[in-house]
Image 1 (cartoon, rainbow, N blue to C red):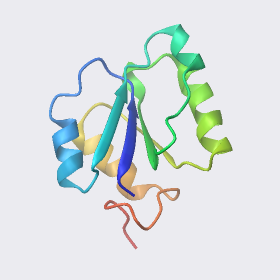
Image 2: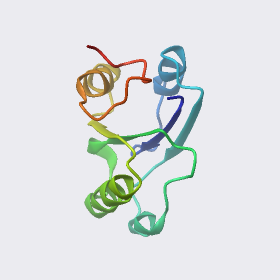
Image 3: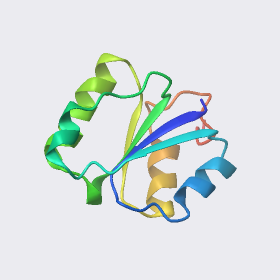
Length: 104
């Protein structure tokens, strides 16, 4: 697993750098605040979706969950802090074994 879509937040700060250190090579970001984002599709080569819950439109989050489920893409939810992101990804039952956060 090496491609990640982050949805939510206007700015990510050091989060992309920390995710790259953890093994994600391709990191995409959409702010997710605008209502029109509901119509955006998940890019083809995304292995995991990370939703930053404190910075996203609720309808966008709901539609994104449906689209990820249709394509069997794991989805994690976290606040915009590295601690919350790490916890969410490492405890997720949906994240596949290829993810650097997976713990047995």
